[in-house]
Amino acid sequence: MHSMPKWKIYLIVAITLLGAVYAAPNLLPNNIVGALPSWWPHQTVSLGLDLQGGAQLLMKVEVDKALGDYYEGLTDSVRREFREANIGYRDLAATGDGLSLTVRDAAHMDDAKAKLHKLDPNLTVTQNDTQLKVRLSDVGLKQRRDQAMEQSIEIVRRRIDETGTKEPVIARQGVDRIILQLPGVDNPERIKQILGKTAKLSFHMVDIDASPDALVAPMGDLRLPMQEDATKFLMVKQSSLITGDMLRNASTSFDQNGQPVVSFEFDGVGARRFADVTTQNVGKPFAIVLDDKIISAPVIREPITGGAGQISGHFDTQGANDLSLLLRAGALPAPLTIIEERTVGPTLGADSIVAGRNASLIGMGLVSVLVIVSYALWGLFAVGALFANMIFIFAVMSLFQATLTLPGIAGMVLTIGMAVDANVLIFERIREEYLGGRTPLAAIDAGYARAMSAVVDTNLTAFISALALMSFGVGPVRGFAVTLIIGVVTSLFSAVWLTRLILMTWYGWTRPKELPFAQKT
Image (cartoon, rainbow, N blue to C red; front, side, top):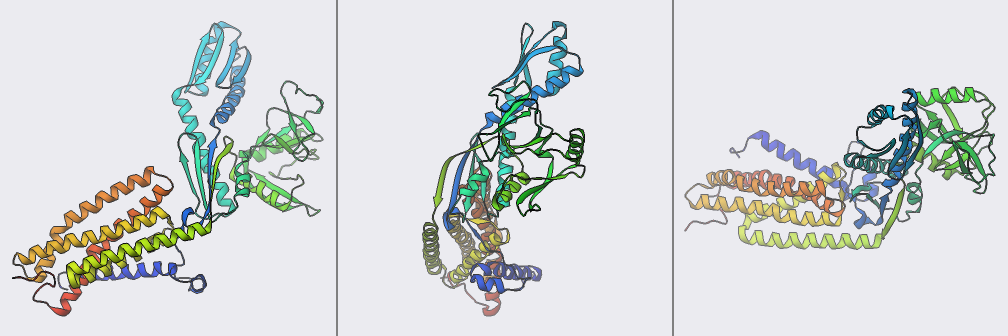
């Protein structure tokens, strides 16, 4: 024992005990885990989609729609900038892949181009006489597409988190697709409905001078249907007074008649604008529009200066809750289209768990027999460290709430072999040192010291490979990589530190003259 510092002994024992404590909830029934003291860890390993069943959705982000919205918004900015600079223009219109306009005076052409580049440095402007065609450059297109994807993933994550779904997997796949895995969800219909709504909220003044029965909206107006009755329409001003991104919070409440409504609060900018709009338009109706449908069109009875309001639209409680959820999570930058749906039943997941458990036990059993046959008593020490390594893996995964998948179980089986491989390297080095004339204690110390570089190199190589898989992989590949990374770290601890403590304890108790697997002739 004198060759190992006491602080290291205490540290090894403490880590081992903590590992057992954090892994214990995975082996106990739920009722016992619930009865444990509050200070005792309660986290367990989360099972992935392939182990507990659930749903998987593959969604396509309509990025071109986001680009179209960008160009529509750009036309408003062009109008404002050109008006302030007294630049005359006509035929300003957004197209599918850009916008076009004609400058009335050729003398203002350079000023017009400068204003366009000021609005967005990534714009390319093509001139044909006095006509300008404006498009995003390749760099600008890539930035806009990436931004739309990143924002879509974030909004999807917020919406899923609001539903209470545990441990979802949300990742980008390819150029314009998002893969969503929902463990434990056997009926994804409500999730699909929530994700299928863009939730683009805006407030518009109703054009009371325009007839809603007209089939064509006047210039500057939009003809939008009512949500509760798609056969009824209203003409509303095209420019939105307030948008959903100015909301600070939204929640479900009930009006005086006990009907569910959605209460909302604006941020500072939205509250001021809402107060100005309601002050200037008392007695006039305004429309609350969600995804190009009018939820309600109340008349402004008095100025609303508190920065809060209610949306009523013949909701039931679930509908009000879902709308509140959507408004809190924010609007998607582009519509989502579900192009593939898969459902994994819990029975199939249970079969996967049984198969993975059997594979782990068989692998551990065969490795244990081989090590014991090769190294006698020391083989038993290595097997004990091997079991401790499995405990450490579950402890770390429970602590960080990592998700265990079927490929993750494969990663565990792989770490079994890696952990024993480290012991084999060390034991063989100890045998060489002992047969070379060293005493048992000196051989143990020298064996660990000289085998360490090979052990570290082997595990470091595996760690780097697993890190690359985790960084660039998705779904099952990522699950395999996470488990492998944890296994590499824990196997180093169990094979190097824990096994050495066991060996030194055995040596202190027995003081052997010879090593059990390396008798000198």
